[in-house]
Every structure is written in C-alpha cells, then in structure tokens.
Amino acid sequence: MVNFNPEEGITALGLMSGTSLDGLDLCLAHFTLNNGLWSYKIECADAVTYPEELKEALATAQSITALEYARLHSDYGIYLGGQVKAFMDRFHVKPQLVASHGHTIFHQPSIRLTSQIGSGAGIAAESGVPAVCDFRTTDVALHGQGAPLVPVGDRYLFGDFDYCLNLGGFSNISSEGPGGTRKAYDITAVNYVLNHYTRQKGEDFDKDGNHARNGKVNKTVLDALNELPFYKKSGPKSLGREWVEGQVFPLIDSFGITTDNILATYCEHIAVQTSFHVSSGSKVLVTGGGAFNRYLMERMAAVAKGTIFHIPDDLTVNFKEALIFAFLGVLYVNDIPSCLSSVTGSLHDNIGGAMYK
Image: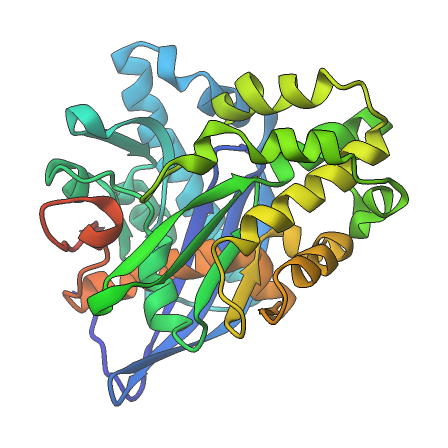
C-alpha cells in the first residue's frame, strides 16, 4: 500500500474523463489530515484534448465486439499512463498515487452493472506510479447507483460551505442533511442548453453571459419551463441529455423567440430553480463552467436573495472533479469509505476502487 503520514500528507494525481469527450483533466494536489480535518492544495493541473481517433473509439465503444472492447480497455489505460508520465515531465512532479475515474461506457445499476474503461495496470505500468481506479463497481454491486461520487469530497474538503453547487452541462448540488447524511441530486440543465443556443450564433459558449444580458426574459417561456414535470419530483434525482432533447429543446423552440431572448430566459430559469434548493444566508461554493457566466451569477444572486455564492480560484472551478478523484484515491489507501449510501442508495457506505502497483 501507499504509506500515509497525516502530518506530511500525500500527493495524488486525479484523472477525470467526462461523457462530453472533451478530453482528460489532470489535477495534482497535496492532501493533509490534521485533527480530523482534511485540507488540500492544488499544485498544478492541465487539460488534454483527445486525439480524434481515440475520441471516436470511446464514442462508439458501446457497440464494438468483446475483443475490441478488451483491447480498448487496455489501450486506453496505457494512453492514460502515458499522459500521466507526460504530465510529470511537463511539471517536474512525482505523485505518490494516481486515481483515475476512467471513461464510462456502460452504466446500468438496475442490473448491478457499470463499466469504466482504462486499465489500472496500464496506468501504473506506463507511469511507474501506483494507480487506483474502478471506483463505482463495489457500490453498484451493493445495489447502489455508483454515483455521484463527488459529494464525499464536498463533505471532507469543502465542509465550510452549506452547499456545493456545480454548474456544468447540468447543475447538481450537495449538502449535509439531517443526522449527518450527505444529500446530492441534479437541479436542472445549464451549459448543455446555453451552449446549444449560443452555437446557433457561431460561438461555443456565451462569454460572460453577454448575449443573455442583451436579451429579454420571456415570462411565458419561463413559466412553461418551470412547470416541467421533473421539478415536481421529490428526493434524489438525476438528469441526462435525453430529458433536454425530449422536453426542454422542443418546448423552447415552439415559441420562436430570438436566441438572445432564449439565453436570457433560460438563465432566469436556472436562477429560479437554483433558488428553491438554497436557503437565505447560506454560503454556496460554485464550480463548473457556469461559474464564469457573469450574467448567470448575477441573476442567481438576485433571485436567491441573501444567499452568498462563492466562486473559488480558477483551478478549483475548472478541476474540482479531477481534484476530488485524487482525493478518492487518498481515501482508498486510508480505508475510508468514498461511496456514501445516503447519496448512491447502496446497502451501506463502502470503499470504492482497486489498486495496481
């Protein structure tokens, strides 16, 4: 096992690959434990764009043969290990541990199945650093969803905040519930919708929310969005692109309003929905790309009156998920559960991961 001295701490490199296939996030951080409290310092981070051939292979992996799948699992692990080695050379660092999310290909917890490819043996062999991966399978075997995994990092690393809010393709929030149980769930779609309409103007995203700021909120569209059935569901819940493409886009497009007005209206919708999940006077940590949308942040603060929305440094905003996966590796080597049953619905808290040395 990797030795851990609480006073000296441990340096771990987290790898994160999202379903958007944008590429690989790498975040190196040093973690210490003092008087029962965890702390971290990001030392360096980087994002690597996938080669087109690899991007295509990952995108089509659900339909390839068993042999091709096994080969991709191996090849992708070796690729990840190579990226770890290149990162170490680029920044002149040597982590004690690598923790990799892998890339999710199959995720069907209803039949106790989940698969994130990227061989841990390949990572360790190429990089020369012990690697922890496969964080979700134990939880799924225990009848859990295997997700989300980030809330355990919210609990231990960002406990000074009442809520941790991520504004990515979709927004999700986590907080400590009654009896010290962590709760987490999705709120609504964010950049998945905003970027879709901004691309109609020939831009990848609405920088600072300037197009939305130039638009006007259409109350009829806003009211219709707020009446979508998902928002009436209680308890932990999650969203995917199917919901957006089946319900949100058709609803918005049926009204025929201008793109700037769509962006203004949808930002207002995000602000309204967010306000239902935070309390006045609370401190909210905001990360994800939406944190850079100044107009959206202004509307959230205006609608959720009295709520303090805190945007941390750019590294934390951009690399929080990779940071927390590095932390999951640290929890693994310390035999501390990383999968919380109050979040995933599993039979009990459990230690996710497998180590390759």
